[in-house]
Image 1 (cartoon, one colour):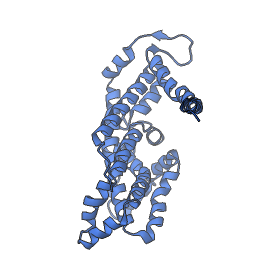
Image 2 (image 1 turned 90 degrees about the horizontal axis):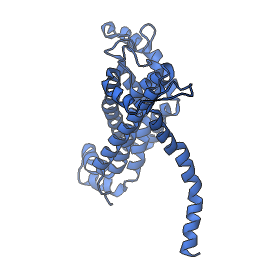
Image 3 (image 1 turned 30 degrees about the vertical axis):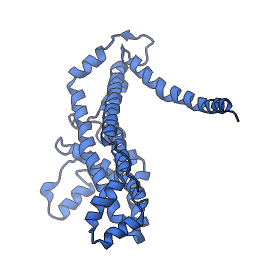
Image 4 (image 1 turned 135 degrees about the vertical axis):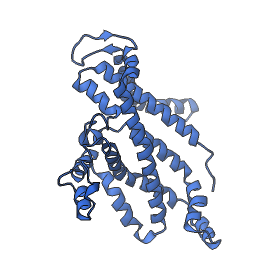
Length: 293
């Protein structure tokens, strides 16, 4: 087959995918930015063009900054805990091959459940009257530590973040275990012969060799935590007193509750831009030459 014919064939096969991607990914982004330039109820045929007024309004809106701050809390604290715990448990489990499959199943099982169902489950656990957490604390004589976990401004955001950590940990553990399993056993055996401890093997061999997966995990968790919605909406609807409000729930409130689609879409555009900027920055920061072995 001639090169020209082969190129034509490739283009023909790629066109449907490119068309679908433009239709369902690129076009909605363009449409969202277009809608953000209007005041629109979402139902009326009439749209009032306001230009960048919705974006100007964002920067004057204290709730927007509160929601952004909560997003950053979940990203930094929650993301760090997820990556740290997943890495720790993957290193431990990789050194227990006989029981690794049992641990993998146990850790990954929560990730197979709908996040909305997980949110309902943890709402019962946090219930101040009959919830498991307060019942255990009362049972061991620590009644002074009981709280209305989702009803107090001091504990609501950490409680929701803990739910996200519990749910997400299994996915990243499997990701790290897969990367660790590709490390040549000869390197680990050589380190053992040289007297390297488990900690030393992890620091000087395992973690450097899985840094590409580590980079992907950090970017992926950034996107997931910055766009979190369902668990917040089911557990607290952004309360109490906006303490768990995030950009996605605030966008939903403005667009579907207040019928202010222009402003709600402006929030979604800012969330998209913020996520892209952070993800690209992290990816470029963490990008290094792949370690050959």
